[in-house]
Image 1: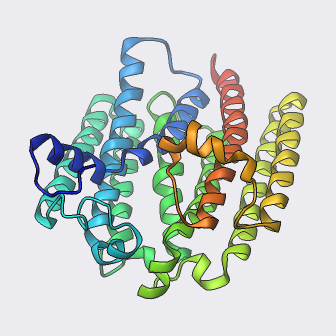
Image 2 (image 1 turned 180 degrees about the horizontal axis):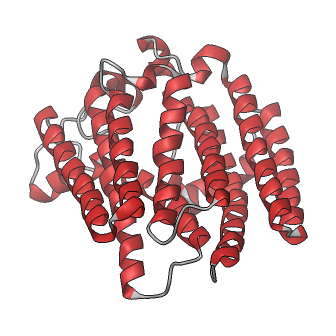
Length: 334
């Protein structure tokens, strides 16, 4: 992005898009897609594909974009330290322009939820509207005073897990079928995975958090212990999926979950031994393969987390989609 503020219409549009942080949009799609798969009632029709696309736009560019815009607006001083190249601290967008940006995406996200509610009606439509409504509220109070949930990781991580992982999963299921018991379990496991990842994602802002008094996990207990807490949560999620596999009576899925858990634990052990340089052999995956999707960092611990994220997300998504598909098959003809 150009460093000179206000240099042309195209640069201004780019700054507005960057404020919405497109890298984060894709984070909600696995939950939406898995929720739709678990319903067993999504069909290969233009209508159903349109609904899934609308859900992605509602929770992704609009809902997630709103959370990023609000976060940048209220964290201007913090970003001058942590991320001075962001649109507002760099001067490419004024604070007033950022406010109008956030109002626009908030309105579009909520309008999408209202349309889905009117289109489907009943409980299923209400779940979709409620899900985006709660997500938008959490996005606002996450960054804005007086609540500012991000000041304490014990509040901020659950808020992100609910808005990014649990509610999109439930909405993806609800718009194609009733909510099944397995769906609730999988939505809960998605929530804990989101909590674990946001705990580690805070490595990138540890310096600014410490200076501003924010209670991130890294500030409170250090990087190595933060990794340990996150790993316990992640391994618990994999064990939860093993229970779902057992409940479905699938020894194949049960075996796959245990194998992926074992692989993940080996990777975790390597990373825990060396929080700053662990998994260095996977750096090319961050730089060349997934760098534009998961971000890059100059903070050593955060860069290590990004390398781990590539491996963990791949293993988790394999389990998530296999389990969602099996649940969907169970309810396909009911």
